Image (tube, rainbow, N blue to C red; front, side):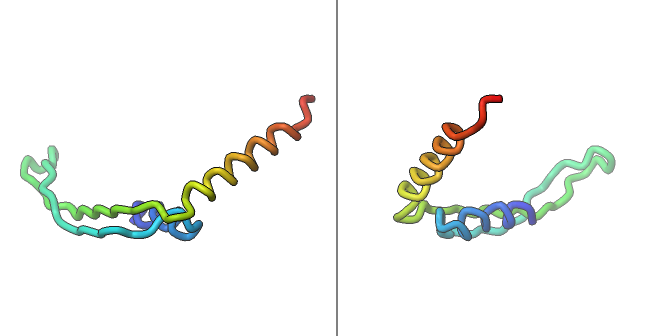
Length: 73
């Protein structure tokens, strides 16, 4: 469930909201068995929040400020 964990990061930081979650199974060829094996598949669609651009601009400005204040030695 790594994909679910990855989705939680932008959601928890106010950058995204869930749009749609789809779960299904897909057939994957298993070379060791020679026959297809069913695997779970999850698709998670996100939308940007209304304040996404403002939050990203603030993060970029903070990063620039940090780089400007770094010691060159």
